[in-house]
Image 1 (cartoon, rainbow, N blue to C red):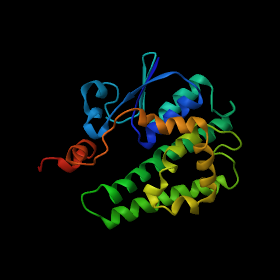
Image 2: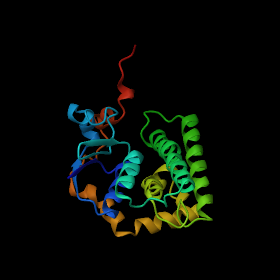
Image 3: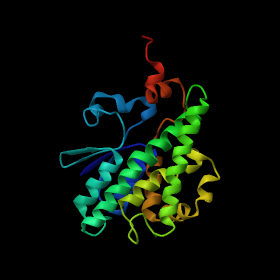
Image 4: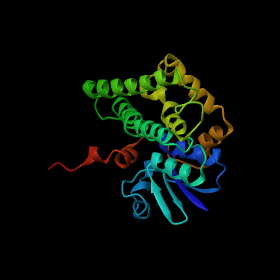
Length: 228
């Protein structure tokens, strides 16, 4: 059975969405990143980058949420566009847009606003601006498309949903309502039974909730490097 190493963060949640949508049987393995589970040797053997999610599927180890979505989509043939070069091009372009833009800028915007040991206006402005710019491109694109690749719900929508549902944390409570096309898509996906199950998966396990010294050392080790 497929093993799914996860936490309740945005990236694992989008993989959980695919697994539930595709009705794939899986064994969930909780990785508590606030307790340094991601730094244990047995996890690093699966992903040297010490991040969730990871899947192990019949001996195949795949890490990075977008790589996992692409792997599962290609393996099962589910939630993929039609098999034509132009459709494949759109799939890869928008999936990489989410992977290299939406995810990183959202994550850094959250970090510098909510977790950095000191508030750095330049960093906050930089990452908020780029996050808002990337989501704005998505919102405009969705003004002419029901889904990211047109009329078909695909892994790109799942990849986007993982972070877009966290927009209040990224850009504030008013951000998502102000992007009406993106909000439409997020609301539609969030109402799907598979999304409800994906979001609720973390509630079946006990994850540490306190952002204390142990958690900060585990999640932000660069803040604790010995002075050279």
